[in-house]
Length: 194
Image (cartoon, rainbow, N blue to C red; front, side, top):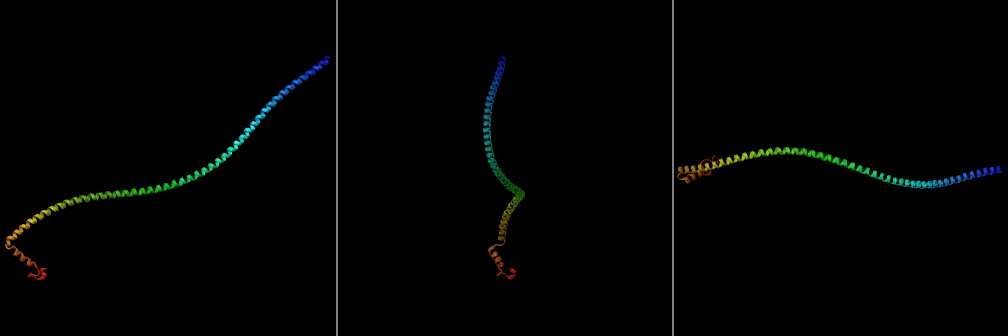
């Protein structure tokens, strides 16, 4: 019996050990199932996150494609605007160059006109001085003429008085002189009298 007891005890111990091992295995299995469930939940969540990320990525790609098209259109428009602005700038530069050349020609013409004006002003000044000198000469000549008229008037009066003294009968003498001057009454021939 003892031996049977030993065998039973050995079998009991083995059963106990097997039961403990089974319990340990069941517990580990439960833990593994729990962890597996957690991993499945995490995987499901990760799959959802991945799907959301894929959707967001596709949405971003679509938006990027739309933005890329808009940017291409905007760049094309900006290129056209830039080309138009460059053309306008070139035209304005050419026009400014023409105006600058025109201004240069006008400045040169203005310089010539100023030179001509200065020469004309000098000529006018010279002519004014000449006019003043001529006016002074005219005044001097006018005074001399007036003096001469006065002198000749006085001389004519003196001569008239002297003539009156010589010719007592002045009218008769002058009438005789006048008839002598008439070509018809003149004793000298017509050709000589005229």
